[in-house]
Length: 193
Image (cartoon, rainbow, N blue to C red; front, top):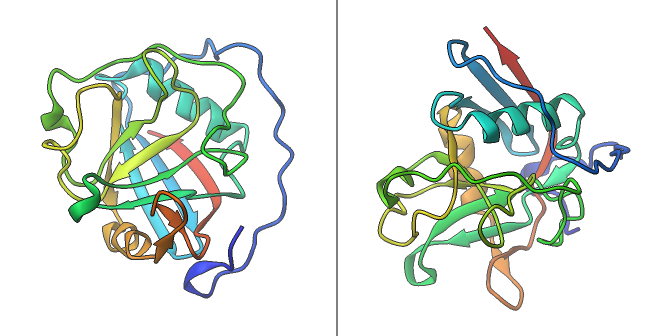
């Protein structure tokens, strides 16, 4: 990957076990799940939504608990404007846009694209019921640019300025959405209360 953004350093390598099937763990809809992202550009917190997206939330909590997201980077930043949607995307252990946990989970689609409001978090996929570990954060309102094809499972509730900073990292590459500097997720932890 490219030089580290925001003056950060490359975090230590993490061994990720491959999984052959989705987790069977469940989340408690009455609990609050907060995911803390420690990145090379600062920390931000996502409140997960176990009521609207129990399968996606449980999957994310499971992977975070296995350190799956530690030492991965945001491999895609779509800058919005003429490019259409405005998202930062991560969760790929390869950083190629094609990696995942080795399984797929069922979609929990929103009723309308209005769910893709600014700072909402959704599961990326390559078609119906193909989500795994990759996710994206909407850093602008994308309700006009996206179809209701992605499970929304959280919202950035703290450190939104960090998301905005990551969104401003210069991009290039063939599709114009490859960051020229790498923003690492150094550590991702989830606390339930």
